[in-house]
Each structure stands twice: as structure tokens, then as C-alpha cells.
Image (cartoon, rainbow, N blue to C red; front, side, top):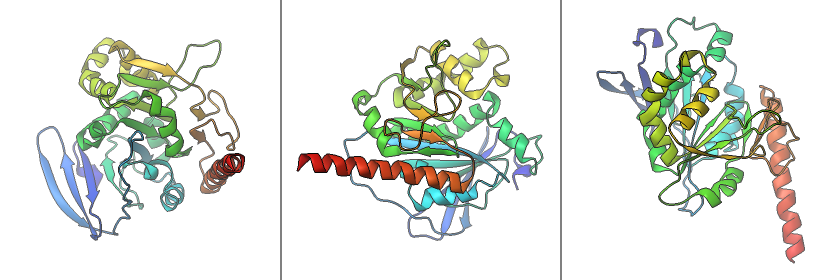
Length: 297
């Protein structure tokens, strides 16, 4: 029961390949406690070493949001965060019925567990997302991979396309870089929270500089989380690259799911819409591959 956890505490759960249990670690500011939880075994995908950019991907979901159907579609197709080298599913406000893969539970003090709308709204605030990032940093795997990607649940995200996109800006030592994914006149380039892409060195600086940003940004906790992150990375001297082709999103530029230039599509929050867009995007990939093979031969 998350209600017994102190504010700022969270629980990380890891599954073991072939085992019908998860090892859960409770974190807070003073101590760490480990317990074993029996549950469904998790499917583990083994990938051969590759020169492609490696991705740590995470998603924040809320209890009673009805998101489990979309998560099931994603998992069964190894889509979204489940197609990355490593992933973490963070549940805000209570435990989900969906228990596959690497998970974390973050309590929501002051918000009733049944108030799905309030929980969802809170995840767009910097005050909550800073806690989410602290969970990601505590998990630690993000610091061993090239890029970290935060994906919203209703985004049809295609990791292979993102790897190809990031390849020219990936190096063994890493780059001090993140992606601004909306460039719409007349405003300046912006970071949309639906898909946030940050290189490892930039993430290291962000993790060490969060306290500085809180001190320099008045009322930081009331800001939209993406706006806070953009301002913070700018204050910390992190470079950016601008590309509004990264994601199709009504908040910036929308395009059909057959658009091959996009790495992600923000869709309606239901499993049917998600599956329809994912099928259109993957079929477009196959068609492009077939056309290329046809030309070569």
C-alpha cells in the first residue's frame, strides 16, 4: 500500500529471467529495504551487441487511468519502451495491474488514489517529474546507455527509427546534447513532454544540477515539466539540436502514422487508436524496405 510510504519514497522492482518473482527495493532519504514479491514471470528479450545507439526508455503511468490495455499492446509487439535495450515503467499513485518488466512505484501524497484526472494532471508538473527523474537516476541503468528517452503512454514510439536518427550524434564518450522536438513559427524551439530524448552526458549534468535549477527558477514546482527541463538544461550549459520531425504531435506539427520521417506519433489514449497507428507505421516501414530491395535488384 503506497499510503504507508513516506513522501519522496519509492519502490523499484526487478524481475529475473525465468523466475516467477520480482525483487523489490524500497528507497527513501535514509534507508533501503529489499523484499521478494512472487508474481508472473517476465519475458526477456536478448539482443546481440550492436553499434547502433543504445536506449534506456521509461514511461510514467497513473493508477486507474485505464492504460493497461495500451501497455499490453506495446508489450506484445515489443513496441515503445519495450523495444529499447533497457526500460522502466513508473507507476504514479499506486500499483498497476500490469506487472510485466522493470517497474517502479512512486506514491502521490495528497491525491486520492481514485482521482485519475488529478493524478494524470500532476505528472505534467515539474514537482512530480523531478521525483520521477530521481527514480530513474536511482535505477542507474540510464548512465550505462547512450541515450535516455521519456515516452508518454499514448505515444506510438518506434525505437529503431530513433536509433537511426541519433546515430550521427552518438559517440563512445557521449555528447552534451538533448533534442528540442518542436520548431513552429513564431515561437522559439521547444521541448514537448510527449517524447524527451537526452544523451548520457547531458543526463549526468542534469542529475547533478537539479538543485541549482530549483534555486534559479522561481516557482519551479508549478512549471510544466518539459518547460522546466528545457530551462534547466539551458542553465546548465547543455547543448540542443532542433528537429520538429522527431514526433507527430498536435501541440506542434501533426502528420499521418504512415510518415516515415517521424520516430513517434502522439495518438488518442485508447488501445484501438494505438494499435491502428502502430500497424500503419510498421507497414510503412515494410513497404519502404520492399521498395528499396526492389530498386536494388
